[in-house]
Image 1 (tube, rainbow, N blue to C red):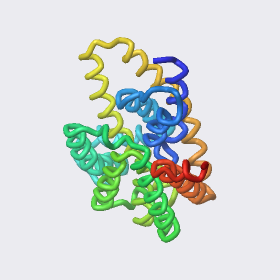
Image 2 (cartoon, one colour; image 1 turned 45 degrees about the horizontal axis):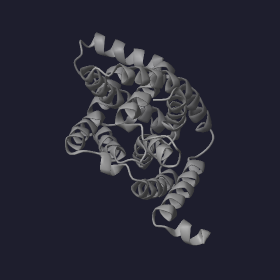
Image 3 (tube, rainbow, N blue to C red; image 1 turned 135 degrees about the vertical axis):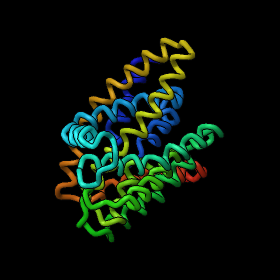
Image 4 (cartoon, rainbow, N blue to C red; image 1 turned 30 degrees about the vertical axis):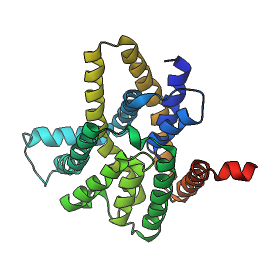
Length: 274
């Protein structure tokens, strides 16, 4: 694969992963609206791994707190320790995505990579995000989450397996419906990405190793590096924005993009051009 192709995909992934606009949807659309071929799921996952490395750097203090909490409790549940409790909240929230993800992987996911489907999902879930952000209270932090809340966010994350939904968007949406502050909902969404994407990355990495395709392995490492740089910038911008502003600009962008995709998929743009 051309290095330019990998670079552009990685930057696109890094900039969109933590914004509620669907990075996977943008990666798929990139190949459909350019001359570059579809990069496939393997590189998709590789550039996502770069993004979780950025999360681990940005939230290194929180992650260290989790590690200390787990060591002190000898890796047993201890809800009185904030770090330990956060680990188990993330663990519980991850289970639904792992189960559903493996099932979808077994039955195939390529048919989900269509511009028409992305047009619908990117629009529908944008509207849902707007409703949640408009009506949701802003009183709860991560430390206020219950295990039921974590399960609900985890099931919401399963919807992100459908391209165009946006993993960060749907988990933030559920967090806002549960009354979480915007920054706290975004933070939990980012932390939740670590085990989910890391697991997928390990699985894809193992398959590449088994196949013995060194070119694909090199492409994957390049993708991880480039997306890490773009992702860390995106995280800083996102967290700064949410100090004072809402998700409305992302909603508007998604509806505009979704509307364009639907008009194009159903042939209305051609009719308008004529």
